[in-house]
Each structure stands twice: as C-alpha cells, then as structure tokens.
Image 1 (cartoon, helix red, strand yellow):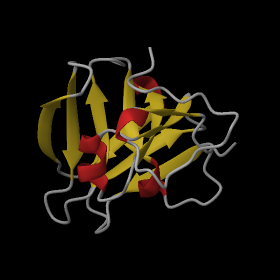
Image 2 (cartoon, helix red, strand yellow):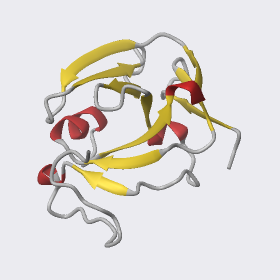
Image 3 (tube, one colour):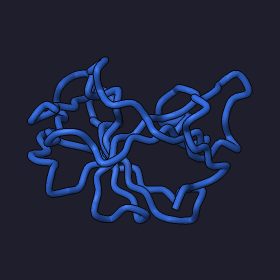
Image 4 (cartoon, one colour):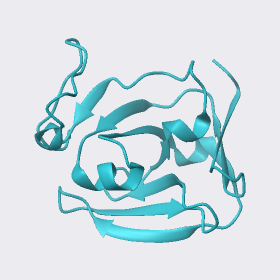
Length: 137
C-alpha cells in the first residue's frame, strides 16, 4: 500500500493528497455522475477526512441534491473543469475523490455499484459485486 496517493485535475492546478488505500471504492451509475464525468458511471474513492491533506489549489463548487435526497458538493478546477473531489451528506466524515484523477492503473478497484437503475444497458459489473438499484446504506 503506498503511503501517499496524489489526485489532480487535468491541468494540475487542483491537487489532493490521500494517505494509503481508500476505505471503499464505488461505481455510481446515477445520471448526475454520468453528466459530471461524461462517462456511463463515475468511480469514487472514499477516504476519511483525516487521511486527506493537503488540498492544494483553487476549486469552484457545484452543490446539488443527490438522487437519494441528500446534499453533495463537487469541487472542480476552475481552469480545466475536472471534478477532483466531493463532500456528501451521506458520508460527512469522508471525501470522495475521483479515481481517474489518481491516474494509477494499480488503484484499488470498485467493490460495488450504486444507482444501477441508471446503468446503461451495455454496462455490466462482476458477479461478485453487490449492485444496488439506488444508494447503498
């Protein structure tokens, strides 16, 4: 397990350093994550806040209500537009960090999929993953 993992936006202006492996990695199929990423799903790594530091650079915010009815705030680079991390009411003690921002092919894989009701028909997940039609508790 690496001691530090660096996630950054496309231009490098917004950076987040996380310690070690995340507590959980999730593939989200909700339509808002699809729009946020431009992909059929978003993959987020969840780290306890005390394992994330420093957050460097400027970020712009986009606050929204998740499909579950809970609040979520995306932090994205005002220069290149990359969403690097987010905070969410469901996990107030964590930061969600976009796995693609780590640009690490050895990064731990997702262990479950959520909001599968929005999944594209051609997307499939491993048989051993729990797949939730909506949010996992």
